[in-house]
Image 1 (tube, rainbow, N blue to C red):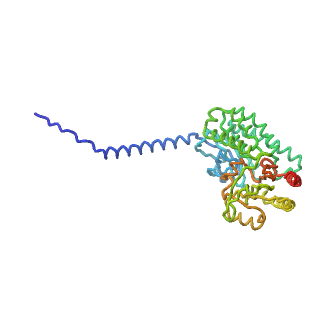
Image 2: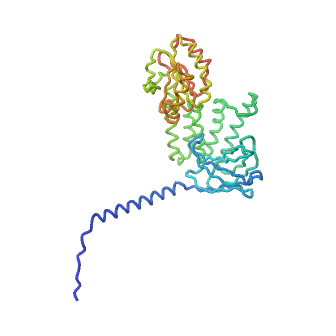
Image 3: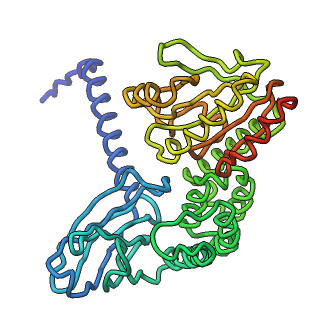
Amino acid sequence: MCNTFTKPSKPNMKTINFFRSKLKCIVLLVLCLSSLRGAAQYPFKIRIEASPMFEGKWVYLLRDNNHETISKKFTLDSVKVKGGIWEFEGEMKEPCNKARLRAKVNGVSCEARFIIDPGLNSMKLDSIQYIKYLSLVTPETPSNLLYKEMNSIKNRYYDEYRKETGKLSGPIQLPGSRLFSADQEIFPLLRASSSLYYSLIALNDMAQFFWMNKEDSLLLDVFKDLDPNLKNSVFGRKFSEERLANIAGFRLIRVGNVMPVFSVGQPDGNQFSNSSLTGRPYLVVFSATWCVPCIKMQPQIQALYQKYARVGIKVVYFNLDDDRKKWLSNISSKTSQWINVSEMTKFKDSKIAKRFAFSSILSLVLVDSAGRIAYNAMDVNPDFKILDELLGKSGTL
């Protein structure tokens, strides 16, 4: 018997390429799904024993953005209290997460802040501590212990300032110098918790406030003492880069330096450059239409402007917001006599604000006739007495 051998046909390259492309798609899909699963790798559970006053009420969990001091983006979850217990399970993309617990009591929205750590977070919700704040006994996890120690230091400074000012109730703003002193007491705590992810979050929160603007080097000193894994994380590298950029930006606007040239749009669409003011003194006011303190200070700026118009003082009123309608309305009603400019972007997206390392509004810079910075209020509240004195010395401006 003779077997007939049939020579195999030549492979169809189109078919092979088709299956290759499909295989690539499948591999990419698997890798993508794996990375997504890997991103949410910190499971947690929250269990709260709630007092009877919360029975049957909805309690809301807000997981904040760790990279923002005042979080505008957050994940919201809700659970109704049953049998005095409130439970929630989930996953985090980072080793811990800033969070808030919120509930309505007698029609008033109240909340408490804490840190979610991986694993079980057991807490007690007892009663209302005082208006708009819930009394929450937080878990004894490492992040929450550090958070409570930090708050204890800050509260001590607030209590001392209330006694000094006699304002024992209601909201109060602690001077930047006091808050800076409080932060200096907190630095050793962060160094002692150098491997804790929340230490990096806390450092980042400190960096967002205006009194730290000129002290970024101190923040970097603490950062250098953190665990290498934290420093080399995506968050850590971003923090370090921002601090170095801030240090460079703040050096640009030190008193005595030549004011850097900037160019920005005007209401009519034309570009304004501060180089056009060479040879005369001018005040640059960095403001926004939504900034209440800025609006309240406009009469003081106007008074200075009118008083020293004789020496040729100009006011460049910089709007750090993207709402053109509000900007134009503010110009027509309050600031029409000044040079009004805007990038038409939000404060956080302003290229000029980032260049000069601004982290707060209102900010003022007084430039003399030689083009040098005579005064800036990037790190303190504007002192109009000093501005008045400097402008009064027309020979120096």
